[in-house]
Length: 348
Picture 1 (cartoon, rainbow, N blue to C red):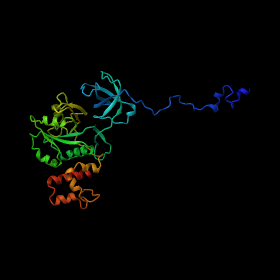
Picture 2: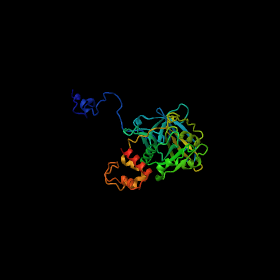
Picture 3: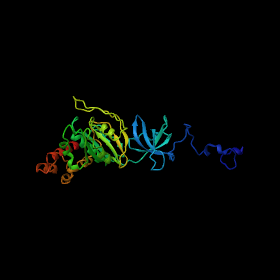
Picture 4: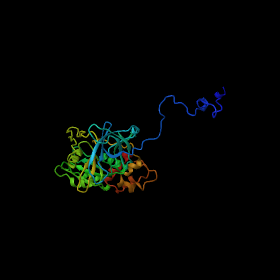
């Protein structure tokens, strides 16, 4: 039976079924082979994340392609499987697919997170290297602090300033409750930084000046619990409805009222802006910030630091540290010496 000779494939029928003629290995799992090709999502829409709540994201999307069209719709979305290891935070620009109608009960899918211009981060404490992202793409930080009740904390504001400068965000300061105490001794600690300052009291809130500073910017509000941050946001954005609290008369501490961050549009005569309200905190860890990043938060000491020896630690036992020399010869007054102490604490 020469027709069963499998060596002559041109002349022999059924030779294609011979074992040595099979070119592909059978798939033992009988499933589709994996591929690195991913859909390009050409039909995706672009939006900004304005809220995060237990794995669901509120995303604001423009109704039309015309930039002059101010109509928008809010879409609820979940993250796509391929983004399960990617953090998504308020301020992120994202691409969405699926049901992007915004109808009640609809759920879209976030498939891409855009490049971030800035990223404000914090850690649980200074020993924790795990960073917690606060907000993306903010270009301003408004530090809200009270003149009294609760008492202002210089070192907490120093931490905010370091985090802002490290992220490339411009800081602003708003000091509230100026009717309770003179804010000037506290503000003297930061006078050399040339940071814009707004002074506020009940019935004398500088809302017009703050709105002017917020126009065209995304500003993240930070501050100790009970300083009046949510009250200020409610005044700037009338329909915000952010919960407000009070300060405990015994402990002098504020109660956490804002439990989650949210981005809100603020309308001003000079143009719209965005404010991001964050939960009040009593600490702001900088475990993710390098020594160079900390030094950037003390621009008032930069000229002295430049004259320190190479590799100077800037601590009290550092030989020939220019900071000690400046304190000794009077170039730094009591406020400047306090700034040096704060710097050394953060570096340590």
